[in-house]
Image (cartoon, rainbow, N blue to C red):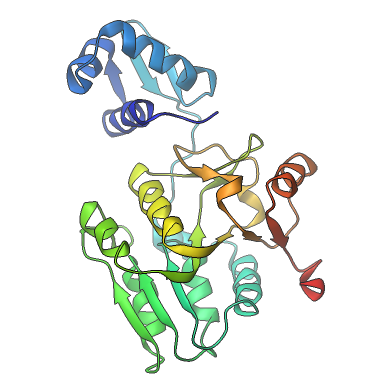
Length: 259
């Protein structure tokens, strides 16, 4: 189920504070208490928050995003495999946009044979990796620097992205739901990803098999907004069916020779 802007704002507030009362949410968003109650019903039904007396709390079962350095050392072989598949798509001279993420960081490493790439990214790790090939032209977004992964976010980063058009957007996401949505851990990540999608002719989502069925904090987009999913395994049938219905090509080691 798609969340509206106000519901995403409520989620962001609860994630920041851990718990929020109906009264303080109504004051923050300048709406009535009853409007807040209506808006939180879908959040409760999706398991994103839990109702308590007078307010809501973040669902304790939602898994937080682990630190970037730790993620770089998890499922390394799967991420290397995904990066090799993406390297078969990206050609010399292509223009690409990449968001921050451990999988996109491995994708950047896997593009070490490509030349003359035009790159836009909000991730300093990715920028450094691709700038080592001196024929590449790398643009890094300004904005608010996040200390965990040294990636930039906010209105300045989004405005910077809007100056470019690229052949491919390459996005690392937090979840691929059974209801047909790509999800991420943080609202600012989802907002940046949507901006990148708008500026690219084709969008590639890179996600290892653990992302299938994962319900994360912030909605990025529906399946229809993405052209290609690259993964180490095929998704479960219920997700695969929805991807095919949405016109998304799924590339894995099992079908790489046919693409």
